[in-house]
Length: 79
Image 1 (tube, helix red, strand yellow):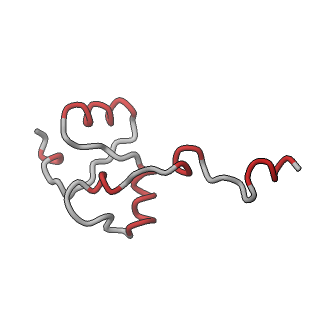
Image 2: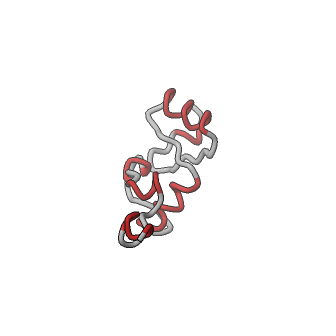
C-alpha cells in the first residue's frame, strides 16, 4: 500500500470521482473531496476530527447533497 495511505489518522484527499472510487474499492479508506474537507473543518476545526479514519466522522447531510433549503421552504418562495 502507498505510504500516504498507511496513517489511519491522516485524511486522504481526491477530487476526481474515479480516484475516490479506486481508493475506496482497493483500501479500507474513503478519500474526501475538497468540499468535504472544508465541511469537516467547519464542523470539527482545522485539525479535523480526532482519532483514526477521520473520514468516518463525516456523514453528509441533506444540505451537503442538495444545498441548504430556502427559509420557509420551497412553498414560501413561490408565494
